[in-house]
Amino acid sequence: MGKPTGFIEISRREPGAQSPAERIRFFKEFEIPLAETEVSKQGARCMDCGIPFCQSGCPVNNIIPDWNDLVYRNRWREASEVLHSTNNFPEFTGRICPAPCEAACTLNINNDPVTIKVIEHAIIDHAWEQGWVKPLPAAMKTGKKVAVVGSGPAGLAAAQQLARAGHSVTVFEKNDRIGGLLRYGIPDFKLEKRHIDRRLEQLKAEGVEFRVNQHVGGNLPAKKLHEEFDAVVLTGGSEHPRDLTVSGRELQGVHFALEFLPQQNKRNAGDTIPDSVALSAKGKHVVVIGGGDTGSDCVGTSIRQGAASVTQFELMPKPPRKRTSRSPGQTGRTSCAPRVHRKRAVRATGRWQPRVFPARTARSRPSTRCASTGSWTKKLS
Image (cartoon, rainbow, N blue to C red; front, side, top):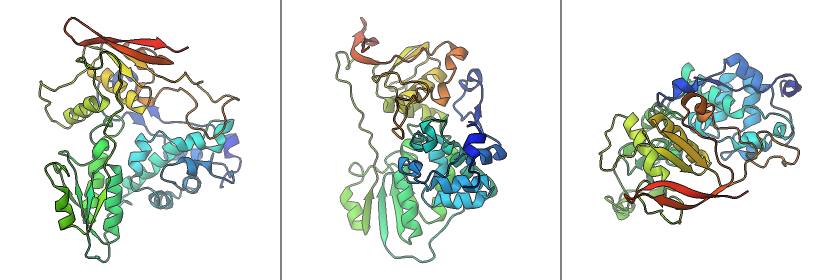
């Protein structure tokens, strides 16, 4: 590596953010990026650790040490090429991935891990600014037609790779806009949808065709795809939620996250949600069951919608804020530092209460109107 002692000399530094009082007033991204010189310093913290556990921790096997070193040496274009060699859409992962690579970082055993996600984010944003991200249409066509069912990140990546291999690719999406959960599910304050639109323009220039409002197996028979195409790729997501089979689950006011979150995405896009199905946390006392990323998305959205209060229940015990001597290395998330979009939100709004660790929901409590007015939970410790 370019700086063998970088992890000793340089401390971890993360991007800044707009104040909670300001950012809860809108649904746009609010992180303040580090200067490129600082990002280069962060790249210098990457150790010559022999076995890059970060790569095995990364779901797409990004070649992380290589582009960390290239950023340290200010070779940003080469860093972008290395990053794109394993990742079709780094601007998505650099914003919404929970960064298991950092949990797996060797430096994380007894120090703060390398800011891998920050560096990835900086590489791709810099590449777009410099105009290095361009369509790469196939030089020759194979004459084969491929249907891709689903336009989430898996579908878009598959479509891009197939198009670049020379096939004629058509993507089918059941919703009215392309993007899957990237479009409808992940809040705009974590991923502004302009990033999706920018990539879609690239894919269209590479020859990919998109068809929306096409529900395969619904208004579009699967048989028709077999008749029209040489191959079909199924890239549908897992939209079937895990239900909570407790007393009162059937009451009004108890909803899945994927009933709640996409509506705000649609509002942000200028759509109007009919009153008969509209969900809003405005003025309500909200309970979020689940302490993962989806629960965090519901917390941030509820606060922005003007909830009277938000309380979140987590089944697992509260982990330490920092890795302890009892925490084995490379095992995943080991601290309970709040997700960035809700840090210090309680100080700005007074509407977010601390998370409850560990708690199990036993039932949903009804009111005289047969609507849920709260939940009864059992503290597990």
